[in-house]
Length: 398
Image (cartoon, rainbow, N blue to C red; front, side, top):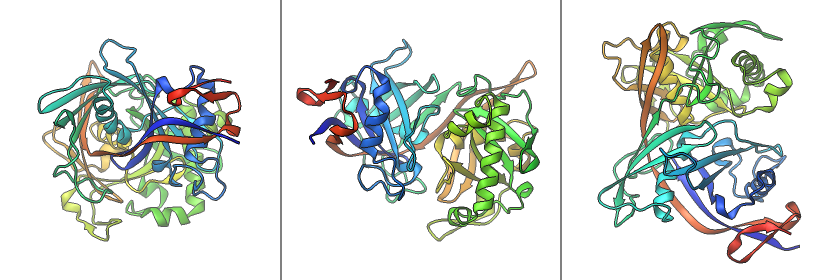
């Protein structure tokens, strides 16, 4: 059986990898996208390794990004994010990937989708998943996005040229409200778990934040230990479903269980000494907050970037569980240093209370990115029998 070949770029954005595709090279019928993405990434794979595709066996390495012409006047490109499940035949479009967002501006410039000159480029990215605008600012090197630089980010070896991401008006990205329930703290009544306090916040992506102590944890547990604790993962999964229903994301438990990306669920604790994946100790006096999160049911080795933004926003909302454990500051505009398994993330968040309601103006952070190869990704034609590839790799109906 023949294979279909689709023009593709493989990129790293922050601590994630993804296949990046032009929307023009995909079928107009988006119902056909899922099987293409599953086949390209190598899902579903009961072994969890995705050896027959481009995925890496964990959520941060099982992603597809689609870039097309802008559909809003305040954007330069449209960007759609697809989270491909590893062991299930499912593609989720309900949330955004902040890490891969850092690669979208450079991709657009390097692919000639817009002209850029001088020393720096600004690309206005419209994320179609959340309907939010992200400003990506990055250095240029002979008209192309710069790669070499001095920025080191936790979880990625070496250094690179920084990409500054500014998430404009990030509140309500999933639900339409920064605080979907109207409360800074809710008490969830979780079947099989009982009552537990949670701060349900929606900025860049919807999140459910818990206090580590309420779970009987220190907050410094490493991903391997969390992975081995099946009872804890099951408990967090049940809490996530209850949070989804409370936030209006899932209509009921069955619907919430199908929406695997959002809300993210995790726990926070105060600044404290903690281990890191590099073997170094993170000193408590160098951070403001400690966080651990799950992504698609798996303990994240760093923090999803949109989640770190949401966590920083929550840290500035007085009375939230995140605010309660964050180091007190006099300057509420100061960046927040978050300790996570791969090191320390520094996130800026501008949050104000206007007419009695909390409002997130923006969140910002720096990432690095790199194009690693380009050419074609091959998909078994038997996986998408209704399509054939025309000259240049563009897919069309058979």
